[in-house]
Amino acid sequence: MPIATPEVYADMIRRAKEGGFAYPAINCTSSETVNAALRGFADAGSDGIIQFSTGGAEFGSGTRVKDMVTGAVALAEFAHVVAEKYPVNVALHTDHCPKDKLDSYVRPLIALSKDRVDAGQEPLFQSHMWDGSAIELTENLDIAEELMERSAAAKIVLELEIGIVGGEEDGVVAEINEKLYTADGDFLRTAQQLGLGERGVYLLAATFGNVHGVYKPGNVKLRPDVLERGQALVAKEFGLGEGAKPFNLVFHGGSGSAPEEIREALSYGVVKMNVDTDTQYAFTRPIAGHMFGRYDGVLKIDGEVGDKKAYDPRSYLKAAEAGMAARVVQACEDLLSAGQSVAG
Image: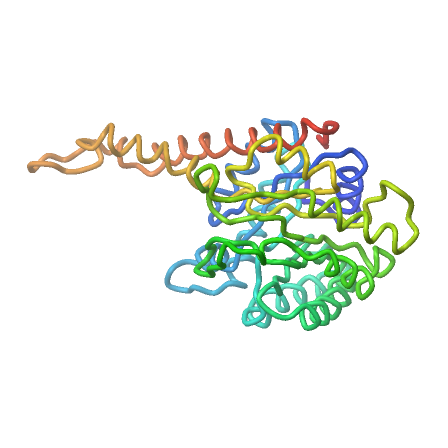
């Protein structure tokens, strides 16, 4: 199927919310990892999301070019072409973009999609993330409001973050402390300023102890009840009725999460969960096995010529694709178990 249109993406979000499941959002940095994500979604019979961080997009442009927009566009265009061969819906998203990179990443990409829409085409991406977690909430929401208006004009969904995701991603480090838990009042301020969909659908990354990377048990304490309280507070304030889930929530730092934590978070309105570290390892592990197991073939040792079939990149990238695809399948199964099938 082609990459999801704005209408298909809106329906994906709606079905996840109503069905009590979420889509895995897989971080990709190359055409090969895009292929692995697509294969994983198809093998699982699940729709899904492919996303590019600022660092991932920069890498995707080539280490000589190192331009975020160029890389994001190149990877997105590749996905548009290849995804047509797969029987599932796939949306394209950009991950964490802090304030100092808005003008060199998200704003140009929104403008590019706006030009496409004005020309009668579909937007290049379906959603973009603005990460204002490092600044004061008032400024965070002011910028989000501006970006929501731009996004709506380009038929794009905005994701924003309130609270802080700990750990490290793309060189940005956040401490593991009480700021990892979004305050109740921040949910309410977000709804009051951005609305609850009447000004456009948006995704909300509220934090409940989320941390990038994988940590040993006990190092990270997830508290999904933070999401439950936030939804309930806003539902009551806006008179939506008991049990309403006004926000479309995002689960960041999903790698390494326990199944029961995932199920609880989904029950409070999570429709998207980011998976990066786990799929990175799943991609790299087969390559390491290939290199260690066939070192005399990939290296020209003692004057020998090695084995061309062993050092042909296709010989190990094929296994890497399969390994990452298998982890994507697992993520789909974990996130769909609480709801219904979302295949095409």
